[in-house]
Amino acid sequence: MKIRKNDNVIVIAGNYKGKTGKVLKLFKKEERAIVEGVNIRKRHTKPSQKNPQGGIMEKEAPINISNLMIIDPKTNEGTRIGSKIIIDDKTGKKKNVRVSKSSGEMLG
Image (tube, rainbow, N blue to C red; front, side):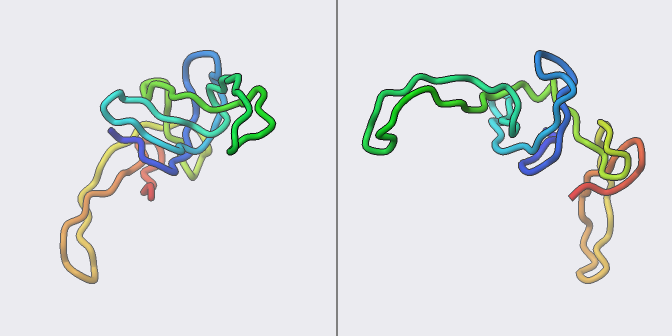
């Protein structure tokens, strides 16, 4: 899975096509992610001690990661992801880094 938590992504298919947001949570087995402000669902809740008011709550629902694309930090557009092996200067160890296919920029 090339998408990680806290990545900025754009939705490329579905009802929320074109919307961008930050990945809040990943479900690796189901290949789904919760993205901030995308796939909002309404839930009717009863009053409780935690929420004494009750009412209609809005919450993000998971979206399939095949409908997401990582945003390139250089161009602010969707990009594919590759990987590159880099040798760390301090320790001399090999490190696998995610790289944007369009601009070649490293992703954190």
